[in-house]
Image (cartoon, rainbow, N blue to C red; front, side, top):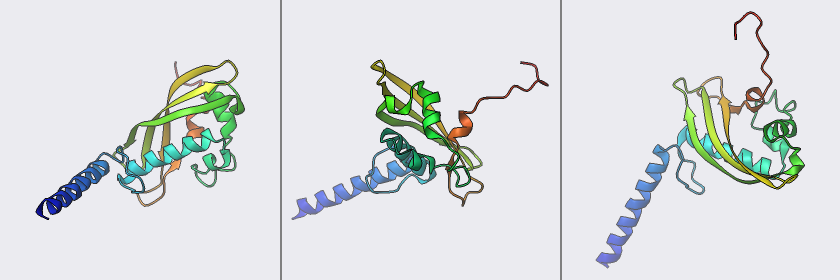
Amino acid sequence: MKVFLWLVVVLLLGGAVYVGAAHVSGGAYPTPGLGVGGDRGWLRRTALSFWEDIQFKDFERAASYHSPDKQAAVDIPFLLQRLFGVRPEQLEIMEYEIVLADVDSTRLRARVKTRVKAKLLVDGRVEDTEFMLFFHRASETDPWFMVLEDSLRTLDVDKEKKH
């Protein structure tokens, strides 16, 4: 009976240490069903969900990570074509993983570095590409919103500045 009790105590202690490490790491360790990691954990889960939506061509849901006033205007298929150089139906997202989730000192801006493995169905090429997804919020109590379309827009040249 003592051995069983010690085994239960060790397992509970080990589980608590693991969940604590997952929380401190910002959700870097898998904890199915547990929302640990604070903002960084939420950003990791959101980025994974975003790439899953892209993988299954659910562009409406992929646009839902943007602020409500921009969701209708976000053209995810166009952004994917700019990223990969092929139309979305000629793209197979094979794998994706989170490399880094980072929140700045103001706690109002964040970035999530992701690694995506995609197959271009036109010629069969497989590309491993890293993307940085940027998130903003107005205050620490407001929700995070992705700004994917801002990071992929064409830059306008300022004629007043030297380049």
